[in-house]
Amino acid sequence: MDFERARKQDVEGRVYEALEKAKEAQARLNAAVTFVDPKEQLKELEAIGADAAMYGMPVVLKDNVNTKGIRTTASSRILDNYIPVYNAHIVDKLQAAGAVVIAKASMDELGMGGTNRNAYTGPVNNAWDESRISGGSSGGSAALVAAGVVPFAIGTDTGDSVRKPAAYQGIIGMKPTYGRISRYGIIPYASSLDHVGYFTTSVQDTAVALEVLAGRDDRDMTSSNRAVEAYAANLNHDLRGKRIAVLDNVQEAVADPAIRENFDALMKKLEARGATVTHVRMDDKLMKALMPTYYIIANAEATANHSNLDGIRFGMREAGENVEDVMINTRTKGFCSYVRKRFVIGSYSLFVENQDKIFRKAQKVRRLIVEELNRVLANSDVVIASAAGTIAPLAEESKDSHLGADNNVAENHMVLGNFSGYPSMTMPTGFAEGMPIGINMTAKAFDEQTLFNIGLAIEEETGLKGNDVEVDA
Ligand code: GLN
Image 1 (tube, rainbow, N blue to C red):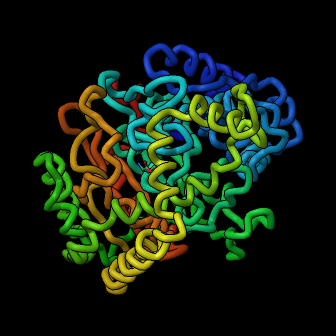
Image 2 (image 1 turned 180 degrees about the vertical axis):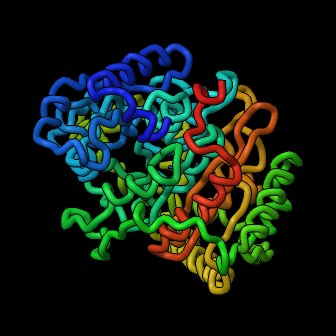
């Protein structure tokens, strides 16, 4: 459901209908952690002009977004009792634009995972087929947009956590440039890779939403001073002169032939509209290094970020004989074993004797990877590839436990957007076996407009504007 269709109903009607639908969908999808009573927010809408960009839009937030007075767990047992005393910057922004939060959505615990099976409240199912994974870590947000419950949801993206669940559920997943959206009040995962992102079902909404969310915030030192552009007014589907570079390393690794065919057919259509489609290849060794490099950096930063979740400073508390015991017991009970495993890896690479040969080395490799991406982007406007190599896996076949052993670039290339901080967007382009499939594009820093413009042309070709389970059914 896009904003336009949502607007066809009066504000109260659409907000309460969305809340009702979210509750109904819970047995099927398990996408929400907490439902939010919209009464107060609806009252506050009286002070906001009906022409505000997201006036009366029911929206969902990933549960790592701090909401004043509303439980925020990051889908971790350790934060089960955490009620923030302040709003994340983006919550204020959304509400000032008229959005009404109806639920906090499930995620892989603390953002760690790609399946949404690592959530304290249990796995989230795919809106298109409940026997399949939603993808993660922003799986609950994606599922509620894909199910047609809300037209917009917030996610966060450290490795691909907005763009992967978007691909698996046939909606748009947008991760803007690092620094474009303030992260103040977001429970972090890995600070040099974390981005706020979001889900929509139309390119127009994607452009409108960035205008709402973007902008300097003095409380986030990494947020950019760059002026926010008029993305929606500047939308332009003209592809003439646009240079689109296909990342061959990824296409060759795509396992499902139907996904490759869908991609190739789309490239022909973009060429017919005047785009120049070229093929590029990034160094294979660097591409193989994507996941090991990512896991070293992400887990090291996560270990540092979450050292305050110890039952003393933050989090639920598990009793013990002394302070040390309290911390050990709290952290043992508070995190799932997968998250604890990641902290072990993170700590290991931060040991003084290991820092140079593991952590700093990974940072150097990250730099080489970004330089390689710069090389291919120097001669093109976007790099494009299939968003994933397969449709959403069946729940019983999906695993998150390998931690870096999987070097299939078709499954993990989107981390390029996090290493570089460049804007990256996933959108639906068709179906295989009744499940949605899609593409991912990455542009130069702060060139979100080009993603939206090429995305608009793609949306016109695919006809998948407003794609959700309800529309398709
Ligand atoms: N799947 C990746 C991980 O487990 C990415 C997660 C994310 O982007 N938050 O770290």
